[in-house]
Image (cartoon, rainbow, N blue to C red; front, side, top):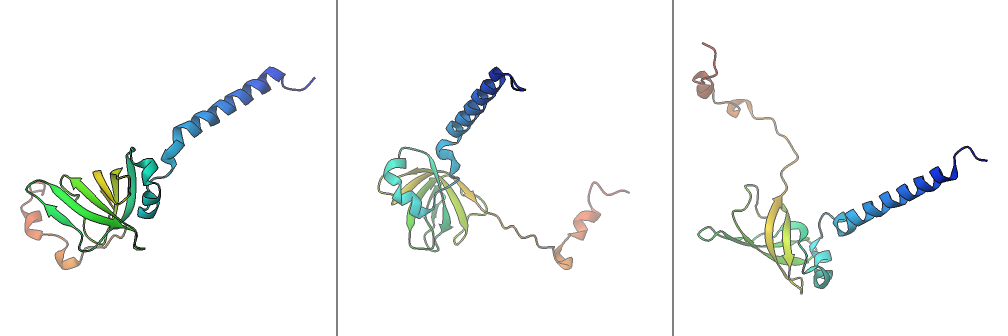
Length: 150
């Protein structure tokens, strides 16, 4: 007779298989954070009914902002020639600009040429620059601050 009863070995195997099955079902198609424009265009016919994320660069000269109706149109591209026209309704994020990275969440057309955006995610700079000494602090503001001890 072995050290562990067979029921514990079988029970442990069943629990392990169930955990692996649940994990693989949970991840499914969500393992890809975002598609590149090239990948999105290649798979457009099969993912057109899903909300997806496409990441790339905002193409220079492509941004058209109409503040009166909050319409933003631009092109996201991968700098290799693959482009997707994006239509977004709403105010763009503060850091949204041409030649910067963007992840567009929304639905792509069946032909992969355009996309209707629900959300824009922009990349901010990862570099921290220490403020210059002359411009770092408004001394007048500090002198008149309500938090200054008197």
